[in-house]
Length: 235
Image (tube, rainbow, N blue to C red):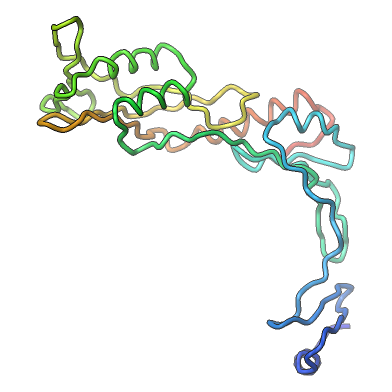
């Protein structure tokens, strides 16, 4: 039956636990009103890799939901309970890794360490590392900044110092999603500041509108589809 407002208020006034049923759904009164009594569901298994989903060997009654670039869920294809329309989440894969702080300036040393440990290494990272690693403490000059390139004083020998253009934009592949797939590339604006007694610092600013997230989601879906062609995958 459907509970009327008068019935609800009367039950709440009793001051003791009461279970009621309405439209096939059970409720229990509490200090702030009625709360649903949901049917029991399986405990979700938490993992950190896509490979773990393959190891789980999902059944025909499951499907995979690629929530975003760092979360994938193995869920029931059908509802567990027709009244509550609940669906079990059997397994959740969460990608965890250190995240580079885009839009914030790093000291030269911290920037070098972060660029080496949080990015796929290629010719572009090598170019930036070579440039940043040779910057003198007093050597960053912004007077030739035109918004696209900067002139940076970098040592090219034991004592020789020359103006070196900072490349922009740069295409890099940070570690931002599951390691089983190729890390998506993005464009970044690379900036340096300092000079006039200030310690040089470096920063990367995202410049692709975060389109890389869509690329990562589709890559995850493609990887899983290849491994589990019989399982429905939504992304």
